[in-house]
Length: 183
Image (cartoon, rainbow, N blue to C red; front, side):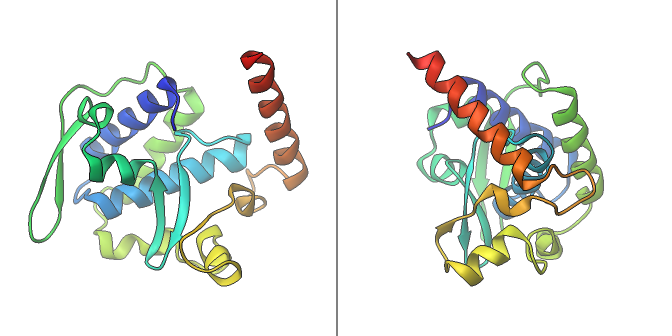
């Protein structure tokens, strides 16, 4: 279950990617969300959206996004509507993109992703998550399909990545803060 702020971030990321990339159906959107969340996690120790990702046979799938999409959830419909044709799903934003709840780093990450994949077809974007050593690929090999992908598998995957020890420390601090806030 996403928090209200995570819902706002997810909704606005969807609007952003739909407005700033072409051919952005469900599969491409999943790949873009996956990239944004995992890049941000390896730099900071937390994802942008709060999505959990599962290793489906054809690639990573964002949850609860996929569940909300299938159920046509009220919160998702505040941001986009969609029409499914025999070829793809076409998303239409119902409001303007707002960066209000996004950090400067989050905006930089999603802007770079949208720029890189703006004209890329869904079939060609698979390299984003299907490369050797990618968290999805490791999860498929080690746990099998339909298993949750551990964000920590992204540690050390780029020069801007925190070490696995730093990421674990940040996760522990974040969990402690949540416990304190809920007491």
